[in-house]
Image 1 (cartoon, rainbow, N blue to C red):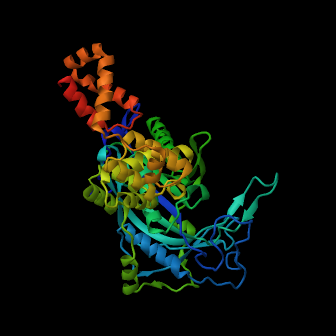
Image 2 (cartoon, rainbow, N blue to C red):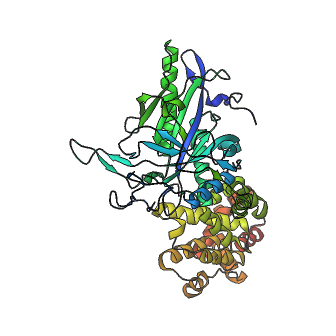
Image 3 (cartoon, one colour):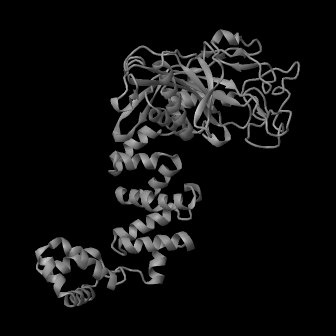
Length: 493
């Protein structure tokens, strides 16, 4: 893999400036809340929501004399995520105090990790349009506690503080500056979210703040030296991440082309205005006065414990996609759509069990996913089960119903429920395979359309019109292949 500095963006991703082409360089610090019942250093609930300050222990509120106690499960979740990112698991890591003042940080410092994080370097492969893949390096993953939340819209002259989130475990995943476009940054966060949801280490609910990112953006001439970066804080939407990168890159290019220089600073993205604005000058590590937390011993991870966690890992998205292509004969695109969520992949495999994989994928992606999206439902709330959808695929495969009738059966199963086989029998939807009945329908259509008969002999592609007419007169129940074969014989094609 190329080093971060060596990689040059595709020309299509270069940004046209008044004085020539520019290239954007992006690195991300993704903050993912660990999926756990309790907080990183206390037994208070880590559940989202609740009345303000209802999930707060004396440790979270930084009462005098309270000591943190590490949550073993949160460490396990971090190690599991590191293994999923194909990263190095550090057998020894240290918790540090990161000192800064915020009203919603009761201790006046954050317990984090600095020089010795729990997870070291790894790599994530991201998939882009056109089948292109890019590897993004992971610099580190460290554990830290979250701050609380300041509320500025509850009172005309005062701010309120909710400490429910204070002390919740966060994994900060720091990438290398390997991304070269807003699309790559969005694909990277999407892939990270997907991996963690597969692992069950973060729910990825960005609207709840469970996943958010600080985006480091700089610009340079293509292939040149890295420029001065600005950090855009706490963006909690993948769409907004793309917009923030595009705006910030063009802002920096404008300054540089006017002869100015970029100030290294922290900025915020205003989604309503579609622009970034200055928040404060960018802190460096020495500004936080890091030192090892005296209340917490170094983490020493047992080799056998790490091996047990590794053995428990599920099949991850990249491997599952490759298997779907190989075992079910799917296109890479269809496999990726099905694998996007673990529940969707599991649903498809249940439908495809012992059946034609391509047909199963077609029905899951086009019919089921299409209807779910239309009605705002998810795979977990689908009215049509995998067994029902598999039943429809079986009825098509054995010639009991046509594809057109199958859509009617799907509609009935969706709205009324029931076994597809029972629906077909009770409603008389069985496909007509009787050659005598099909021949009569064909003869009637030919007799009624002598002009079309002459045309189809000159232009055989018009056969589809005849097939459509026969299907119409039989209520869609005739076997399409039998209809086509009978027409060809009768018309001498």
